[in-house]
Image 1 (tube, rainbow, N blue to C red):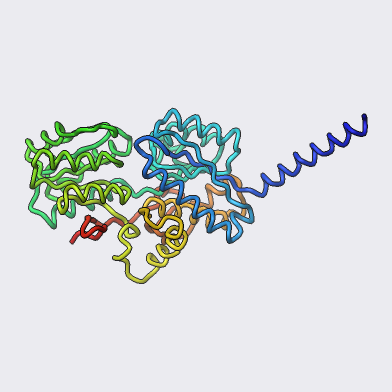
Image 2 (image 1 turned 90 degrees about the vertical axis):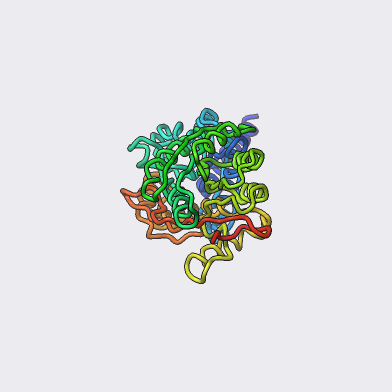
Length: 379
């Protein structure tokens, strides 16, 4: 009996030791993503971009010889669910780093205890609002003003419209962009004559759009993502506002196609070059796009690549940070991310430093439209 217990104990010790070895040989990346709710389209793309990047990096040995494992938790596009998921990934999954989706409020809510755990946060969203939390966070989202500037510049240079309305949802990102929209309008000779809000799941926005029209707004600068853009397009058509333009935030190509099919040449959107690949010229940016699409297209031939490209870029920056750090320790990776040289990615060029935790410092955006069944640059 004693020998039997000894053998069992020995076997359990070996199994536990093997588990520890396997854990040590794995680099775990936690990702809080809104796989359901208003952020689902973009955050599913973010999750899938992380996955194809992990495949590509694992083919080359992973992170410092450790196989990358992506652990995702659905935050349902709600901050309270994000907090639960973040806590689980820290305590139970013991992740090495976070690379999370675009639900800003959820990332904000979790930032304090992620900082306490001394884990870097790579984010699809804007940075948390507190300075000490920002020290551990890195944003792969273009500064909100770039989206506003691209649309305002198009209105100023390509149309005779000088009065616009802002239509926005109540998310932190949208509220920030709304404020910028007010501030920047005069720089482009424009006047914001109305500001109207909506909920991401609203099925009708005719009241808000009617107010913008009554105030003299010839174009709607919409701030917010998902199916609400399609709803706004349908409502503009239903109201018979034949001259009103709709200019959408950066989003998934499927949303642009649906809205474009409704409004035709009166619908425009903000797009990075990877979303309009036919416009790319030979050079580092095209090389980066091609490297990403090599893995993306075979797996998802009919899906829009834009937000997945940003997730891919975040993983490539991580790989370079790990090479610099020569460590998978959280603080070492945080410090090394600040030292990664300028990286030309599939979505944009990223420049991080100790004082610069928003990586996109040059405006990458083009204005696109839907024409002849595809997304193209608006002339």
